[in-house]
Amino acid sequence: MLIRLARHSGFCFGVKRAINSAMKAAADGDNIVTLGPIIHNPQMVERLAEHGIGYVDGIEQLGKGDTAIIRSHGVTRETLRELEQKNVKIIDATCPHVSGTQQFTRQLKEEGYTVLILGNREHPEVIALQSYADGEAIIVASADEFIPKNYARLGIISQTTQPLGKLQELVTKAVPCCGRLLMMNTICNATSIRQESTLTLAQDSDIMIVVGGHNSSNTKMLALISSRCVQTYHIEMASELKPQWFEGRERIGITAGASTPDWIIVDVYNKINEYTGDRDCKTNNVADIPGYQEE
Ligand code: SF4
Image (cartoon, rainbow, N blue to C red; front, side):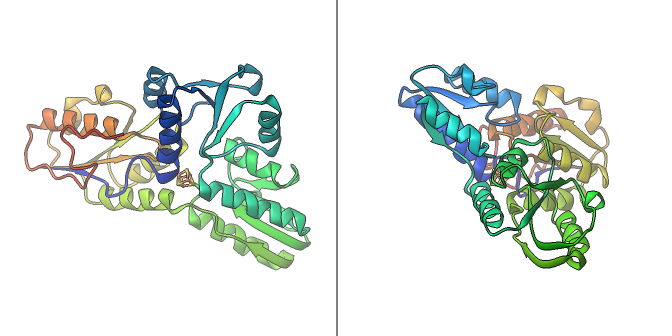
């Protein structure tokens, strides 16, 4: 029997960086709050609360002396301005990849391009990006939503977590209707390599366990990719695992979204190990499990 972890799973660079910034500031004695939950993982949000790191839903809830952490997917320009006026300490943990996309959006706007964003219009990253185009961007969830007409200058960007194929389809559809087209591949490969390694593992497994917040879109995407190949269960915690899922399975795969902390992956791996009788396990990392710690 094999229990294997997808080669790339769990926290991405940007999420790790934001959490480390929050932890460090809390350890320095600051009163830390994030604007909205720092990641889409309720267990991690709870653990941060134990370290005194809470969150607020709006700037008006910030108190004097608070330190506000900007999450990895950034905030709107207006929010940033309001924060600066509020006179609170700000730690900007916007992922550098996301801030690069924001700067490029601004450049497009200033150079007179119509900005076209591929992404989920309700996602905070996309809402923030739109503000860098002064709220005038066209947002589409796929090429199908793009209505071709003549654009003298069109600039295309993408939410960092979109699949590359969708961006390619959009560019293909946009090319014939542009005088000048400027496009930057703003997709972050942390997402695509997690998707690729999930697919690779799912194709060689009898069952896949996808670990991550039920409200995490990148984890849901991993579950979707995996379920096209093999029986797949999306769980948040080891306690959701059921021993009967593993009966008669020889090759068990585990993958985790970019907002899933290592300690949950370790719990899941060890629980499966317990249910299946601890035979011929193989890791593929998270620091070679059993009681892995470091955060
Ligand atoms: S998925 Fe990529 S862009 Fe988003 S926070 Fe992680 S590293 Fe940054």
